[in-house]
Amino acid sequence: MMSTIEMLNTKFGIAGVVQVVAGLGGLAAVRVETGEAQGLVYLHGGHVAEWRPKGQDEVLWVSQKSYWADGKPVRGGVPVCFPWFGPKADDKAAPGHGFVRLMPWTLEAVTQEDEGVTVVLSTKSDDQTRKQWPGEYVLRHRVTIGRELVMSLELTNTGREAMAYQEALHTYFTVADVKRVKLTGLEGVKYVDKMDGSKVKTQEGAVTITAETDRVYVGTTGTVTIEDPDKMRRIVVAKEGSTNTVVWNPWVAKSKAMADFGDEEWPGMICVETCNVGADAVKVAAGETVKMVQRVGVVRM
Image (cartoon, rainbow, N blue to C red):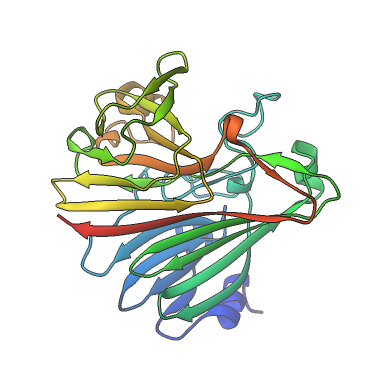
């Protein structure tokens, strides 16, 4: 009898390009290898774990201490946060950043086009999700692996009432040394500084990381560029359908406090997250479909 992974590979594999494999922890994943890029997308959490365009080092960061198991989040890559961000406001025991990143998703389609290979995964409301959140929905993650990494998070309200939700593509990027990195594109933007009592501040100049950093930039639809002089590259993060950008690095103490994050790993990563969170939660009418898109590219310095 064929295993689930073998059946998925028979249905969705493309010879020499796409293969459904057993990834870390035995979790099913779609491996893509083209002349333009390599990537790996897990069905667990609809999670993008690897993307490396031709001639470049790996762009996404994943902790060596990450869990790879059903019901556990992956620390790194691109976790999908939905339908809340951070702790659930009315239930501190609920999973942080929502429940879809802990669940197995359905592989719906794999297609090859000029711009790359697109992997479509979905998850939808059921009896288990309704115990945690009342929304009726289908959530799709369309991931295109090519010279750009394009991720489109698409929500369809399948219920009879309007609803509101928070969402994030919680992307971890690998850098040589976060202390030497700077982020451009957020100059003059207001942000909520979670490390300073959630005070609202205005970004002056480029963003640099000199301590634990957790900021929600508001009212921003612009592109952010991660300038990494030691890797001699710029990672360009453009977006559509998003009015917030989160910037996060745990620094020393927070890294040591997290079981799924190596104590000395923090200098090698930075999160730049495309999202709609807090007061900017998405409102969607019954029957409506809305989407949020993140486009990642790499330019040599």
